[in-house]
Image (cartoon, rainbow, N blue to C red; front, side, top):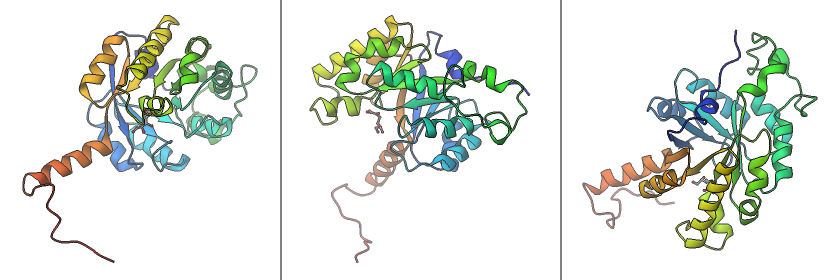
Length: 266
Ligand SMILES: O=C(O)C(=O)C[C@H](O)[C@@H](O)CO
C-alpha cells in the first residue's frame, strides 16, 4: 500500500484557516465522537491529558476512518518518546515549549532516519509502515511527517525567527496560557504585552514561510488571530464544551447558587 498522505501538512500551504478542536478526554470513544463533527484537525493531547503511548495509539485508530486529522502533542520533546509516537503512526507531531533553534533542530533529527537524523528503524513491527505494507518507508516517511513546535515562553518569542527558520519545522503553534503565565499574567493572554508577543510571533513565523497556529477557544480571539495570519486555530476544547453544556443545562432548572439536593458526604 502507499504511504498514507498527510492532508494537514498539505493544507497548511493553503490560505484558508483550518479549524481545530482540543481533544482531552484521552479515550478512543470520545476521540471518535470528536472526529465525526467536521473540524479540520483535532489535538490529541499527550501533555495535559492523561495519555500514554497506548492510549494515543487507540485514539489514532479510532479516528482513522474520519476526515479530521489527528495532531498529537507529546508530553515533551524526548527523542525516544518521539520514536514511539511516530512508530505508532503519528503523522503530525506537536512539541511543547520549544525555546531555541537548537531544540527545534533536535526534534527534526528525532523525526528523520539516518543520515538525516537519529530515528531508529522499527520496520515491520510498526503501524507507521503498516507493518511493512508500505514500500520504501525509510526513504519517504519524512515527506508525510509534520512537525509543529510550540512557542510559549518569552525566550521562545525572542528566538522565534531562528526556530521558524529551521528546515524541517513545518509550523509554529503559540501557547497563550503558558506564554501569559510565564510573563507574569497567570493565564491572561489579553494583556497588551502578551498580545504583542503573540502578534510578533505570528508575523515572524509567516515571514519565514511557515504556518502559525494558536489555541483560542473564545471566538473574538480566534477571529483576531486569524486576521493576524494564524492558519490553524483550535477554537474549542472538548472537555470545556461538555462542562459548559452540563452547567448551562442544569441552570435551566436550578439557580447555580443552589446546592445539589443529593450530595455524597464522606
Ligand atoms: O499554553 C497554552 O495555551 C497551551 O499550550 C495549551 C494548553 O496547554 C491547554 O491545555 C490549555 O487548556
